[in-house]
Length: 349
Ligand code: TXA
Ligand code: MG
Image 1 (cartoon, rainbow, N blue to C red):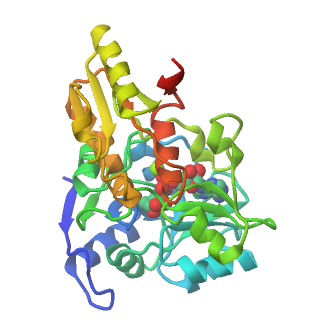
Image 2 (tube, rainbow, N blue to C red):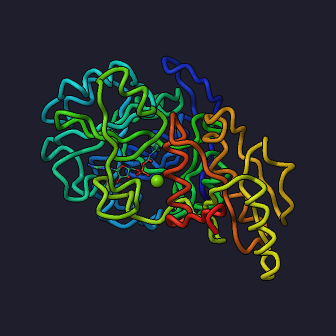
């Protein structure tokens, strides 16, 4: 039976809780345990153990060439994992750790399981800003490899129920600390060169990074879906509900015309919009994902909304698009991937 530990989301990391003691003991025993972070639920395992890390790949059905992020609770843990700390990385950690920012470092050899880094010379490290995650990592006393706790290809989990839906029977347990906050994963940034490069947009925005280190680039392969992205995970289709997703560029009026066209073809149409658009569409299922005027609320709801389409029998999902600013960059990256980069421009049709 899979364990389900329920814990307050604001545990005091200096106190002892039986759920934290128990779940971190499983990690020490090289079992995999899901836990909440401020972004999405992670599927944790001892990053130093081949046996433990293999269990993550197996539970998720994840390709073994896609490396994992190592989670730490204290800065002292970083020194043991990496060869050097570039100046820009230092500045970014100072500003945004703990928080939704993952930094790529040159890795120290022989410390972590090679399966974590999938044969790369580098390692991705992050310090999550969630009391439950920090308490579990501290109690385990280990660097914890943790990808998002979904089956590979599915939307990432933002509640313990999502984890159970995907991984029941495949993992030792889940620590249930309620809904996650940010809703999209951490920003992955490579600081090894002169100018930091965003390999995966996420919870810390490009604008926020630029406030600290000046110019920041975005890995070009992310925008087009062509070429090989530097973050191996970005090449896989991901975050996809069962029905095909299309991003639609145009006014709600234009989008409705497309919906009507699909209806005439006999398709049941789902629409992903926001509170502002909820009443504007006539379709089989219209779901509001946060409020357009507050993109953080869209990020927070995104994966839950994508998953919600799976409880309906829609044949096709048409999604509104979002501005590429602030957390909008991460929202659009995930929607592009959910849609396999299919965009319909209704104005030009
Ligand atoms: O918010 C998050 O980051 C969540 C929570 C659980 O912490 N974790 C997460 O992990 O999203 P995962 O494994 O689903 O995504 C890790 C991303 C992948 O795109 C992977 O390719 C990239 O980070 N990555 C890991 N190690 C890397 C490396 N050495 N170089 C480049 N990209 C790397
Ligand atoms: Mg993931």
